[in-house]
Length: 199
Image 1 (tube, helix red, strand yellow):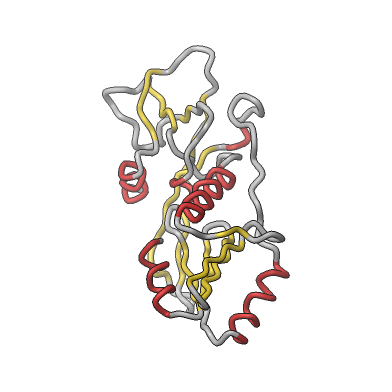
Image 2 (tube, rainbow, N blue to C red):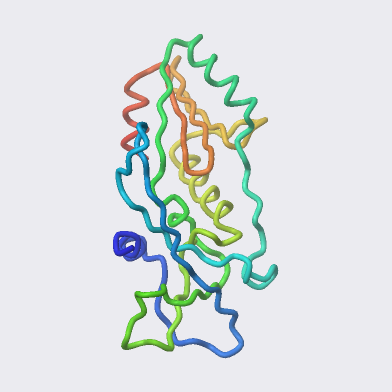
């Protein structure tokens, strides 16, 4: 739990502010999971603080929730395509992906249970970044990532907005986004290494 809150501090997820009358305060809860290895043994415990999304009101706490979703057909085409072009695909998972999404709305969340600031018990967390569980979380993350990729010279796919490409001479780098998982590969190993460092 403390590791999760340390991530929040590094990403400047919220500011602690006095509770304002008339503002909807969304609850927060801890979700605890065991991470398993391929043999089914517990490798570590994971705690994630999530917003209780069912308290959100459309038009007040969020406007848009839609985020493009990877089409399974495109993934099925991408993998044989990588084989034909003789490059191996790589996969990365973005740690704390949603915490990178920036909020456009004003959202207040209660302090995490068990980690309330004893000097400010009547304060709440005013979110600056997206918290897991918010209805707009996938949208905010995708907007942030796609803007970042476009700034780095990638082009979005015409048919599938979650497929990005970048060309350098005869070489091509393909990047497929599936929420917080990214599949990528290139005809040039150096482009793959540069993308890994970039991410």
